[in-house]
Length: 228
Image 1 (tube, rainbow, N blue to C red):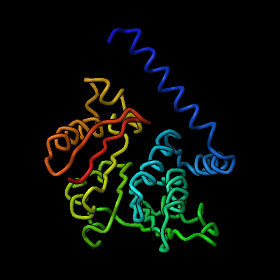
Image 2 (cartoon, rainbow, N blue to C red):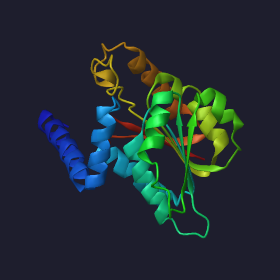
Image 3 (cartoon, one colour):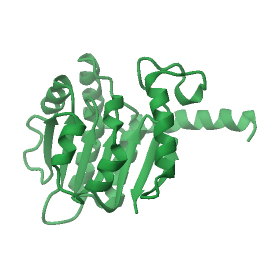
């Protein structure tokens, strides 16, 4: 590929993001503004849309979202879980290690569960403490974003918790969505904590034979891993 091809790809990435944002409902735009006003900027609209599509494609019934105030993504996935056929509704478990993030999620969805089949469970805990308590092979999709600690032992936790064919999605693998980013993985000179962490995580994940994995250029980079 030449320089023109890469420039066109960058423009295409921007077009996809803009399209996803404009197709979000006014209610979601309002939710984004509310979160930003409290100091929790929300992530890529295209990423949220893609994660909801993964819920639909997997026909997921049980989803874990581990992050920091991942409200808009949770809203997209809750809507997708509502569409999955079946007499029993699904469940989305939002795990946040910060009390502020947990409070934000609870506040954002307060009163919206009336009439919904899907249950929302909000948990304030560190993943290394909470995940070992959960039943093995009970989950269809696990989404991880936010602080470095959220990604620690992610493959081992996911392998135990996911059913066969279930999917682990790790967000921001380009390490662009963090305060100390100096270009993330796109800049070899960036030796910040998250960039270093993500380089190691990519190597580990792509070599892990328990999963079939690939990198997807959506948002700030997604690493998809399907449990074999």
